[in-house]
Length: 119
Image 1 (tube, rainbow, N blue to C red):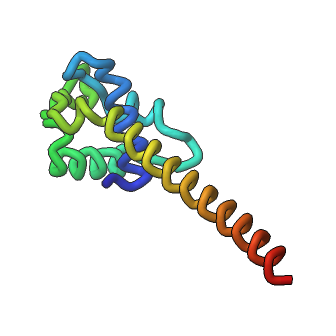
Image 2 (tube, one colour; image 1 turned 135 degrees about the vertical axis):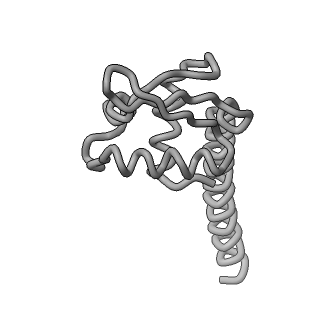
Image 3 (cartoon, helix red, strand yellow; image 1 turned 180 degrees about the vertical axis):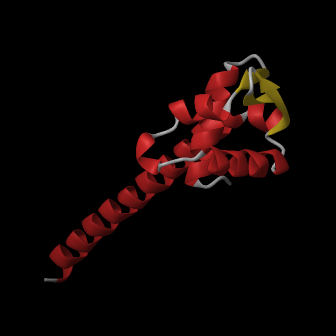
């Protein structure tokens, strides 16, 4: 499971690739999509991209374009399924919250019924 920063960077990479499976991006282009309040630096983005590469989300090849560092990113199966996996996690969390609320309501109702019977 990805942490919050890795999720944000993976989401940015997925948007940049736009369903094509591969893309050519610079660290600054990725940083432009990321939330500004987090204060991402190109070095931090590079470190996160490398960790995502190790987790087999994509392959990265570094290159130079007009003197600027760029990445050629090719999504793997994990990268292609990123959105679907994220949606499944959200559904799972929502289901667990709903189940907890339903359990609390049922417990309250049963408690009120038992209180009415035994008082």
